[in-house]
Length: 251
Image (tube, rainbow, N blue to C red; front, side):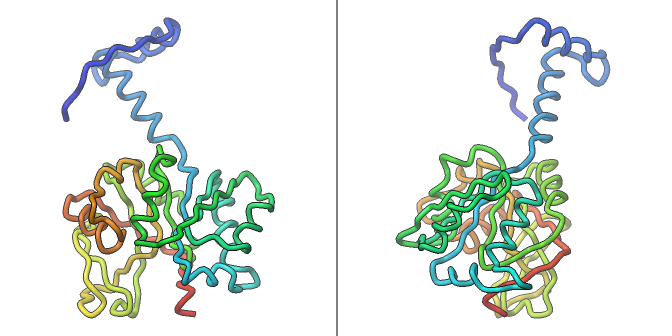
């Protein structure tokens, strides 16, 4: 890995603390100690931002009942329980969504982003590029996942991958298309009729903010354009969510 020299100013007391952990073996220099401390700090920073993508054609799914609550209420409860602070909902905004922003949810701020002319899930996400400066979660709004997302976030932050994709096993992969794994790496995708495994995309992802560097003028869809591209670069890992999964259009 290429290293670059930089000049920084540090409080003298803090510098003394940094020097105190230089032991001459594992940490042989001040610069190495600073690098290790920075890496540990970045890894420990919690992921608190989520983005929900839902096409206007599927918007009604958010307000359908599921176990005595609407789907959007399930999403919000899941995010609040896992200590998310910001939720961006990208779709064609209607009055039902506007009413959500008038309610108070515990420590969760909801931002509505109007998508007047949908061009694809990747294009929708691109609308938030300037606001996503740290790792973030993306949810398919018409799909509900209830699982230990903290384990997925830990896996993501401990790796080098720009994206971690939630996966599940399905008895009917030909209805969705399948995912091809090599260990933890996702290496390929098969269309619905060509499905060769029972592993499918669960509709929940964690991205590093540098994902936007991999966009080009043809990037419109996450599923068709972006994921196959980063899989070929060995930058996409899979994580089995092993929890409740409901795709509302199927119900």
